[in-house]
Length: 235
Ligand SMILES: NC(=O)c1ccc[n+]([C@@H]2O[C@H](COP(=O)([O-])OP(=O)(O)OC[C@H]3O[C@@H](n4cnc5c(N)ncnc54)[C@H](OP(=O)(O)O)[C@@H]3O)[C@@H](O)[C@H]2O)c1
Image 1 (cartoon, protein in one colour):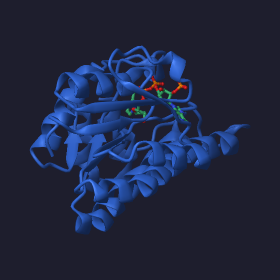
Image 2: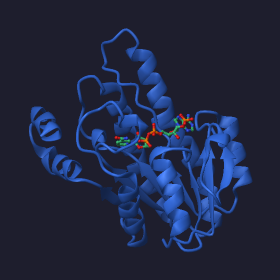
Image 3: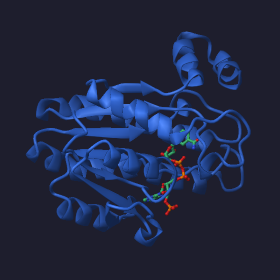
Image 4: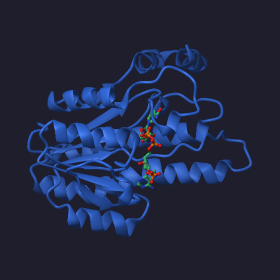
């Protein structure tokens, strides 16, 4: 789909990658960008339509779909990472919170906006996933599991929405220079560069973006023995 004249809704648009999406969509000629945030007063982008939206709250998701009936592009960007392994004292609570936001959030948003997209000609959904949809890391396993679930959701949505002409794009990316990765050492992608790649792929009709070298290497290595994944990710 084309960015020019698109009407986009970006979740978690107040900072990080979501903010970069909203800015780039506007700059690329989108007719309207709904910048959604739990706290709309935190949105700092000129020219967007602000929406109050916590993707884990069904009533707010329903209200957003009702208020934004002209949307042609949904960007499921909002996410959380609790930095939690599977065996810690708070692992179950962390896993539930991450699944609630990173899996049920995009699921609820996609269900609410599927009829909107259909009514507006099909449009597209971009789901922000991770290189960690494919591999697990010690100390971050519960987040990885939630992103695996979101990957599966993306694959399923793509099949179910094909009949109504909705393009479903998966973004897989490693470390990005945002608050989420602030305390994690390593090379980080610039969110604006990641968005540029995604929007180019969207316009070219593609369904998957592997935004950095680590992500491309990990995907290539998926047929290897499980233990090798970790080496690929940290190398
Ligand atoms: N940074 C990385 O290295 C990296 C790598 C791979 C994938 N990702 C993914 O990229 C996406 C964007 O993350 P980021 O790096 O930009 O992180 P970030 O700077 O921490 O931003 C996260 C955004 O999600 C919002 N959010 C969290 N829970 C929400 C909820 N229940 N409802 C609505 N909004 C909610 C936050 O809003 P508040 O300001 O209200 O908290 C914030 O706007 C996430 O899906 C993340 O998993 C990040």
